[in-house]
Image (cartoon, rainbow, N blue to C red; front, side, top):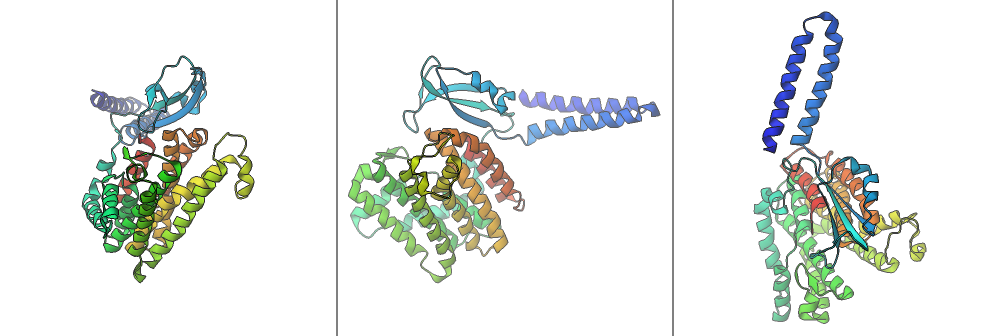
Length: 398
């Protein structure tokens, strides 16, 4: 019904445009009016076309509302869009929010501002990356083979790690970076496996440090095998990753990855040292240890850039390097990877209920920056996948 209504609207506008041209052609005195009316109607048609064929992504905002007071929602710049739904969520776990009423207390409020959702449903990740399904199958086979250990205790942990798979977003970025400028090859697969191993190792070590018993809907390696086994499994993954890129032909990729791993370690330590919490007016007292940051927002961006965004950037660069892309091409995909990584972490923080005030302000800014960085890339199927991936990044629920 919605599709028929909008088609009918388009036909009506075109018919009106035709009638205006017919009537104003009667007299030369109306020539100026014809020009103005036609211009106005052309703009109207273009506006409707953009909203139907190329609608902007949904807007998701999260805010803490005291005592169920929703009046501040109407003071937002985006309040001109009619909210599709307003719901309160009190975070109990990452994946299982508990619904609450508006009556009392502080609640997480999520406001969804849709633009023609009938015409622009948010794609799931599998649909987005379906054009590279063959390359992903190659990666999965290569990754499973690479995880193999010679001894049974470690091999059982590695099988558990392989089965506890996530979105594989970082290997996807490596493969897309390669496909954008060439074809996936053995070096691309090694780079993708390196990235996933390093990422997995950091998660295993994080669960030990944070004493987390859950990871991706299952018991964490630490909870299932114990602290000692988890630490050794993380070390094993890091060592295997280094061996993957030991060949002299891979040294350019290895250099990018090692510099990124250093930055990730610094970012994690900065976050734990500062005890990062954004208050909008001041930094933590330990900010004096980080002289490069002039405000809480700068400090927040510095940390998420190091701990998350630089790895996304390295993934894109590694894919491009594996197919011999030029320096200019590598720089363009590198810019996208960095902005995308920041955007990804901002959405993660909103989902986790952490640093929501800063993340809420910065999310639309970095969505625009990420989309703008894509304009420097040549139009192609991979280019469209990266656009869909960016929208998925801000729309995902986990």
